[in-house]
Length: 402
Image (cartoon, rainbow, N blue to C red; front, top):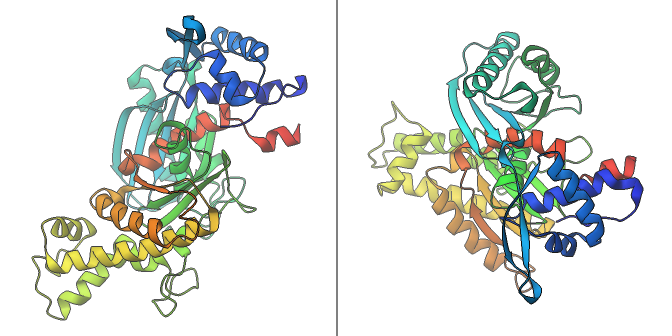
């Protein structure tokens, strides 16, 4: 939770601090807001009155206060605004229409057809507009469209030398989508978007510092430190997939060796299973039709080969997680992304044991390891949350600029 200030010149920031306090709670009183933000009760009352007038929060019942006097409970009004979140992955596009509480109202998954950027972006825009129209969302309540895209991305939303998107280098995906969709567009990489979604509507709503380990086509990360998303100088921080876990391991496309992504991403796990099948390992799996989903299903059924592949991936992810927690001293490590769907329980248990026994500061604080409840759609829900975050979250960089 962010601390506010009573200086009049930063009223906009204080408004965002109060709204965040309401949004991060399951119902909160004005007195509680003052207590956790450091704002005076008078300042909180003025800000809440304006938020009520603007329709962003609602009064919803009461709870006993000091001396038995009831205190009015405030909540964010989910119907105050909506956003479409789009997760553009090389193999599939996921769409989510979410309300201001971050709740997905509509979900849609579509395969990527073709390879040319312009037609694909036109399809993204057309589908986003269709979702809004079919849901009957009034135009004045559409806050924008969020796009979670493979990176790296520059500050203007231009894709720069993407390793998994050949032909997309230099594509100004933000401005291109904005032109076709007709709404403001916010872009971030898929892992950071997922972390923002977790902060806005998931496990990390009231957690100051947490890391998000994103497992999709590749492996990435998102990072919140002291309540602020951390992107780094080039906006590409938290590339957790490129933590070295095997110095003499396979070469990664980044130029390093033994990156956790090169060893544990879905395609790497499939390659490992295929190699062992070729060496004669017994398994229900066959080399002809081998996929990450098949490996996960076989592991769940107790197949020895698949179990060994999954267990090795879990161990290497745990090695990376220990390094992440040691470096960043976070309160929570969230596991999310579509590749967590089948193996989330295994990954959580193995990583949790490693973090509880191998992190230097383990005696000072227990770091929680949790699987995101929205793991499979984390990037799409996160993309919608990008819009809410940019519009309403308290951001210290804006305060400094002001």
